[in-house]
Length: 512
Image (cartoon, rainbow, N blue to C red; front, side, top):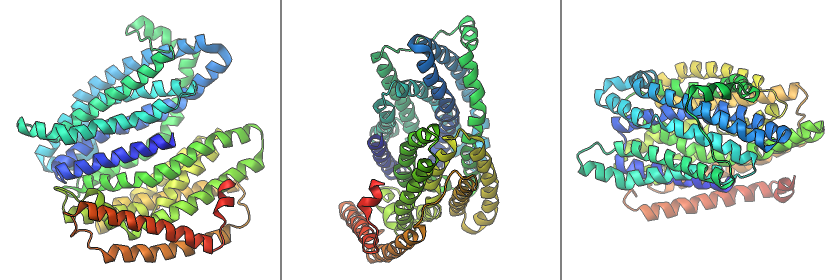
């Protein structure tokens, strides 16, 4: 799963590099990212969020207690209900696209062409949520049957479809007299269909092909199943927790749309770079820790439960602090090498760099949240993280009121970073006060070792950022990429040599 996650991030980076080179930054790119964000936001809230969190535990329990026949009946019942809801949702989304775009980014109204383009692309891409909801259903089934590779690999198919759209589709649209950015909307839909096809093929190979009946009698029979009603009941609190971050994203997109052309794209590109450390550190650690924490809780082994959280937090500090230092001191080379191609200008690099530094200020919190929340979920405590998330949402918007007039779109990123740090600290304090987590001895010495090594790393990266004319090397793509690889490799060596010299035994630490 980690390898497929890495591959999806790499292909996503190639996708974004091609988009930046092909389309640059304009009202049309803002329109695309707004249009893409609408079904993507709903997918994260419902399909991969609330639905998956409610569906998978009930499915696993049914399989364990009632056998495969009852489990297959439940899968088909949920598939029938879900498909009918998705068809209705897609129709409503297509018809109501102007309202959705206005709610998400009313600032696009300043450029009627951009607003109209966002509405059109929203209508093209809205059925994507239907594909991805069925993908989430199929992924839950496959994971319950311990088939993890296909669900983890499907995001790569979306990136490949969007790469093809930027590389081949956009020039073809231009030759046909159409707006080239529209090719990306087509790429999203092709990617959704490919992902759904891969999941359906995997289900069929297991003999679990979905049997969907689109009629009222089948819907009533499906709803009559107790397990179906249980899933619907569980989706309520899960939706509350998942929605907080998406609501924050919606508000920030709305604000960014009023800050001038390019603001949405600059923020989006900076957040895409942030996904590398948050996914490879936070998501991977969360996936690793969750089953072990749940097992320790079930065995009533409080000491092991606390020790696992302690180990996860130390690993977060060891890896995310230097990553945050790199984002704050080496942002220009990172943005320049990845995005500064074709129509992406020097000004675009500087604006994206400012947003990336804002996000980087909260990287430690963003990653730590992924380790701390499993400490609550493993105890079946979903309510507390959700309530903390709501409070942090309010704090973040208050920070926007302070930062945005001063820093424009970078203020939005900084508010998210500071909010993430507050969220992580709040979760940590809650675990400590409840007695769930007791920090082990040695944190003071460990923190000093990481801080000292990170300070040395910062000096090295600031020298690297200032010693090379990164923007002037726009035409020398290979030379600039080679220099970036050299400095990143050097940074890794400097940091880990420094923590080793400070007395940290990395081999023993990782064995824990």
